Amino acid sequence: MNRSELVDALVRRRGVSRRVAEEAVNLFFEGMKEALVAGRRIEIRGFGTFKVRHYEGYVGRNPKTGRPMRVPPKRLPVFKLSRVLKAQLARGRRGG
Image 1: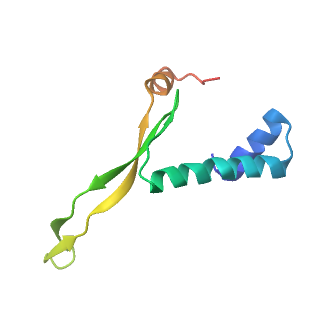
Image 2: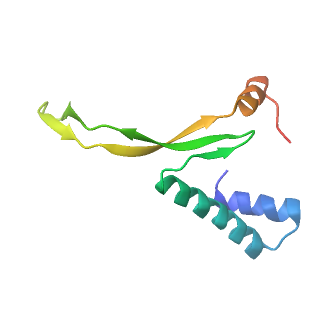
Image 3: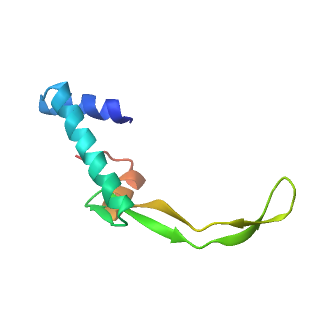
């Protein structure tokens, strides 16, 4: 599902205008982005948890030349599925 499909689902299920649905979806994702950039954890019960993981820099190898190269430290988003959703997926059931 992409962003526009999410907006369409909100319009269908809640009967709000497309403009209101787009604003709600955009606010939701902007809030998530702001939290992750600030290094905060996001927990959505029954769905999962987003957080930022910090990775130290290291010396790797350039795959083309085989020469050693420095890989800088980085911060990457990580998502962990909730136990509830994981169980529903394992059973092949849709949540409601």
